[in-house]
Length: 163
Length: 119
Image 1 (cartoon, rainbow over the protein chains, first blue to last red):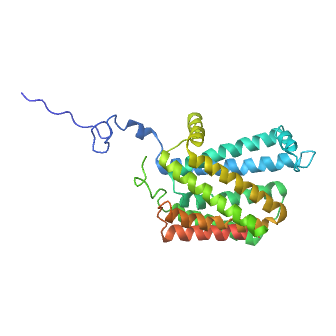
Image 2: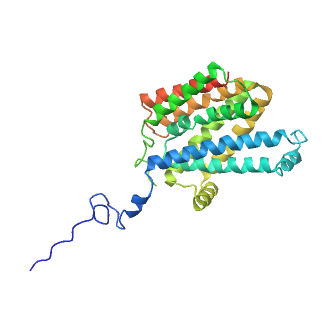
Image 3: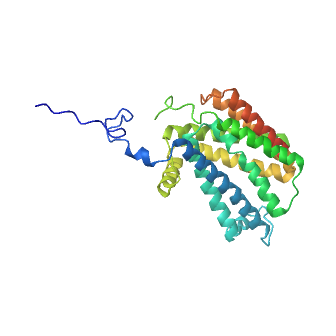
């Protein structure tokens, strides 16, 4: 009597798709890398856009103008809007760092440029500026450029520069 | 004076981004969960290129602030967008990223948009 070898699982330990000793189950619950990258892009753009807005809004309603005196800057941080803006900008810096850990610099730069359009849109929304034809064209150029860059592989140095 | 401020902004921004990209890709995939942020903060303290990148970022920030204070935003934003070109070329030559015709074309479209937006 002979024992048959257990059939190999499609994703688990020893399967053709998985070379890791502990199996690949964690990969089935994680988002694909591309989706994680775009999630970080959205988070970064949102945090920086609204962080800057909070900062601008908070500093504008301060009684004293920000001059050369450092005490005025420290006092401005007590304003809740300014503090929230600074916290959002610090968090956006970390988000961008996480983004740079998974994607090329030459990918991150153009793709996050959508933030310029958001900044202009938020400024319009809250400062009631009019949208000129030139600005619509600018937004269109940025979005189409982002779409073109977004169609290229996000990380072209993978493997070449491992730990 | 204004071109000196543009030069400081552009070069400091490019240096900061190149150093960050180099160190963070070496560190492997990072996340922004509570634990991920703590790990990133620890990385910034541990890795000297990241510390240097923060110093460069501070230089670019203050140079840009001084630029905005003395010049209209419609000059400051497109002028400092020159860092886009410098960084993309450096990413190819220094970091070894593959900047093919499609990525180059998309980057130029975005650059054109930023310059137009600031008008």
